[in-house]
Length: 94
Image (tube, rainbow, N blue to C red; front, side, top):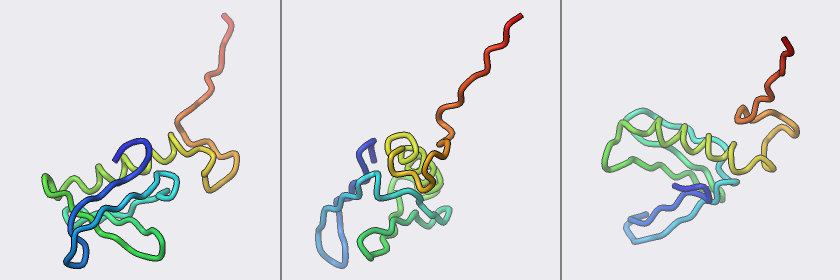
């Protein structure tokens, strides 16, 4: 996963495959701790379990959702909503 999207290369339904999910198409990532995180795309539901650390599913989900908010502001579900990554600071004169 990087700022452009999610990539997977490996086995799918008994055959080798390579998948790419553009970051703007994955606004939310549900997960089950230690069981996998899910991506819904193109009418299909994909479940991924990190081989190196299955318990890291929540980290993948949070990083993916944060990356979506940061790099796809034009795709936010609510137009004009603050993504939380920019907060204007009030200047106080003393």
